[in-house]
Length: 276
Ligand SMILES: Cc1cc2nc3c(=O)[nH]c(=O)nc-3n(C[C@H](O)[C@H](O)[C@H](O)COP(=O)(O)OP(=O)(O)OC[C@H]3O[C@@H](n4cnc5c(N)ncnc54)[C@H](O)[C@@H]3O)c2cc1C
Image (tube, rainbow, N blue to C red; front, side, top):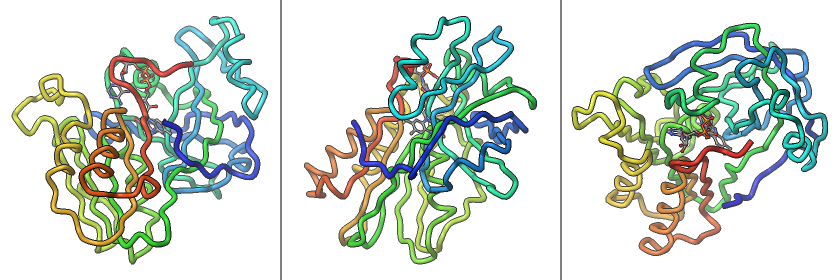
């Protein structure tokens, strides 16, 4: 599942410091990272992703790979585990270039994921690093409206897309979160955007795991049953791999949508850790 992406003209490893860690709802933390090296990050906006490097438990410093291009991963894997940082993928939720700050919003899913555990506990002053992944949100000019769909890991990207959307955007947005208390009441978006929030605790399941349902299943079902507006549209879908792949299959096979009008990105796989 390799989406088309727009990469920055140049990119390099960037070392930053955690400036803040705010719990915004039961399953989301917003970390602010900052430092002068952010002058090397191109502000691409929308779903701009980064590789995020952070220390393993017990490491007192962050040893970033120094190679760029495709060589850094080999360099990382050759480091002994005692020095090798964790690396995971995240979205730049907000970029304040003048203040040399970015925000990243983490969907917290317990202590068994290193990134989730780190974001739950990390304090200001700790180091972190990033490497730009560019943007995959590339709507074609002929789309008269947009379908944006994701579970909690894609909520930051979709909210960022909506923050930066032109006032003329018409969109149907499907967002799934673990529990009702994770629904954002204050989403900034154009008038033509309709947001459908789906919470896995809506059946009274207080821990938000929807009786073990895989995240994204609610959104997939909701779009399959939705009365979508007429006209050609662009789809951006991301999250647990079953959601974007299932949605694409449905749109292509059942609604006759051209594959080229769909960006679908498997952000993570149920039951499998990200490599790195
Ligand atoms: C381009 C891109 C941008 C992304 N942006 C964001 C973002 O802004 N915010 C965000 O929260 N995530 C984002 N993700 C997803 C994030 O990279 C994964 O969720 C990642 O696996 C989390 O790492 P971890 O160390 O916590 O868990 P891992 O070590 O990767 O996995 C440990 C276990 O947790 C499960 N798991 C992983 N992620 C989740 C989850 N979200 N919910 C429930 N179970 C999970 C795995 O299946 C595995 O069983 C993005 C992914 C990509 C590719």
